[in-house]
Amino acid sequence: MLLDSYRHKGMRKALCQEIRDKGFSNEKILKAIDKVPRHFFLDSSFTEHAYEDKPFPIGEDQTISQPYTVAVQTELLDVQKNDKILEIGTGSGYQACILVELGAKVFSIELNRILYEKTKQLLAKMNYYPKLFLGDGSLGLPSFAPYDKIIVTAAAPKIPDGLMNQLKIGGRLIIPVGKGEVQKMICVIKQDNELTESSEYGSFKFVPLLGKNGKPL
Ligand code: SAH
Image (cartoon, rainbow, N blue to C red; front, side, top):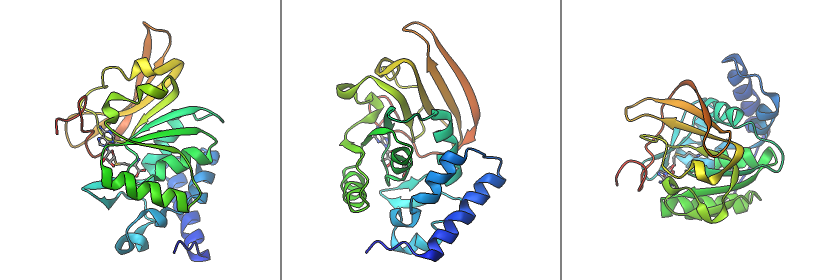
């Protein structure tokens, strides 16, 4: 049973404060983090730790991102109400729910069938309905393109070919890029079909993006 107690709500407020103390100040995003019960996304052995600002295992060798990382990636995405957003790497579904809370139309693709099934069931129970897909997101999700924004929540060796083609002009891609343990967060804005502008924001640690345009399986 999914139970959100006053104690959990209190821990969520403390988590938001911890993220603020790290220098994050976007209150709209903090409000979404305050709203989404992160302990629902973790296996019972980790629920006590759900409101620590850390990544945790979600099975299948994958992790739910650290809340601070979710906050930063979401801010870089500059979510506007009704934005059509593609998330690559659904994982636990937590990041997708934050985007839904911000009013986005979310399309999220996951490569791992077990996680895909588990997350689909959980989100339905929580009454969150992003559109979930099973497949290799290193190729994007061309059938529903173009998107206003694309967020990749796994480390890509390089920006996968073809992703920029699935963005609208003026759209942006947020992606951790790097082959080693630590990646740089990259924000690419598509200015027109030829021209793009990209900037780098800090170092983060993600599990690898697998698949055809990711790390070979
Ligand atoms: N956004 C997630 C964090 C996911 S961790 C959350 O909020 O919990 C990264 C996820 O990317 C893992 O679930 C992994 O299975 C998935 N992944 C890795 N390569 C992928 C690919 N090519 N396409 C789609 N998902 C992929």
